[in-house]
Image 1 (cartoon, helix red, strand yellow):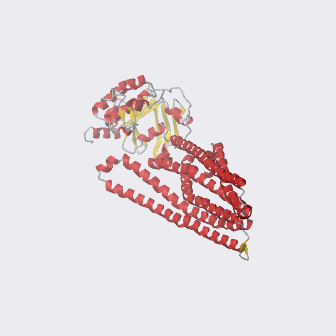
Image 2 (tube, one colour; image 1 turned 45 degrees about the vertical axis):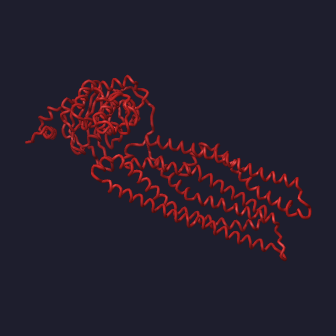
Image 3 (cartoon, one colour; image 1 turned 90 degrees about the horizontal axis):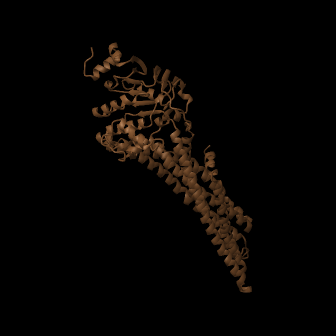
Length: 575
């Protein structure tokens, strides 16, 4: 599976890669022709010079050819390096884009189970390791294999018996590669996992630094990070020990064995003290055998990087294989906003239902409030309406149409949401309201800001840092509110949007809501019951069920849960 995916990416730039390999082949052929040319020059023009004299003209021509082959090899190695590197960089660019685009298609459920830091690790560290596979490992291994094949061909051309002796290198190397793969895969998985864990912890620590410092947890968090870092170091050292014990030592041992065999063979060719092998042949054999060990060393040295890249590729393709939702460009007219929950039940995991048989209707222009204690299911209802999750049982309809029949991007096009803790991006106030959407003009941004009563001293061109860390809670909430209104949604969701702001800002938003809720279905999840007195319908949830419903005065008259919650918030004692 992984090999197929890698091949699919490589095939996108196969012409470039084929040209690169072809240039590499030319470079290897030119390089390996050098020792053979040297043999001819030694045997025909140097060894025989005492009896025949050096034939300078042919000798000069052959020297020129020898030098020309070296130049050709250098030029084509340079070209193949540039071409293969360029192709590999394009492959990884494509892969990173695919991973990022796929992340945008993943459901919220995926991010519930995998921390953001680990996702980032797969996009950055793991794709970089895969890049190393294409940029360095494969080109080095391809160069090494071509050189090995070329050397063996030339050895067979010179002396087939000696070539057979040299073939003895292959079995121990294949055995080593098999053993290395077996153990290195395990350690590389652990190394990449610990690196991912450290990235996850770093992301969590940075986002939660206020809490860490406020509760003096710096040392505890440092100890936890040190433990992960120590485990990462331990596995790296095990890989280092395995590499050190095998790479140079193995090649050195095999080199000694081959040279011993070569000396024995050279000696067996002597007759009465006179060697039967020419000096040129001796030089060529020594040169080729020396060249044979360089690519072997080159290939063995790349095995560790190859294993790291292979493990990283598995992690990247595991993410890409996770089922996502295809981004749809389908558009639909702005709907009225009649919402109905019909016998909806929902479980985040297995059969642990957090919503049980939810039934209610919200007509266009109405304001529906959801109240209840923590964990009662208020936010889960909004998550289902926004299709961050899909219902386990039942159906949700908008204007009579099941929302599961409409692409998620299409259904959300006419929805707006303001969260309890709004997320702001690096940029300006205006870019955070319009999200740089070309459909939202400057005039619409200004209108939205005016509708929420201003931004409490902020200008549209003021800079905003990540998460709006330098702004007050009220300012962040007003920007988020203006963002939702700028898109003119048919359905507006306020998820406890007034819980983190002061009374003055809350009054500004309440005044804006009274003007803007006309023609728009508004859902409010609220802790402050005083803010929902004018809601058309209040749903009281408890343990995932609607236990009371009605308007404010009607619910107070029931003397039930809503009445109890309201009296507690009002500072009154219940009977």
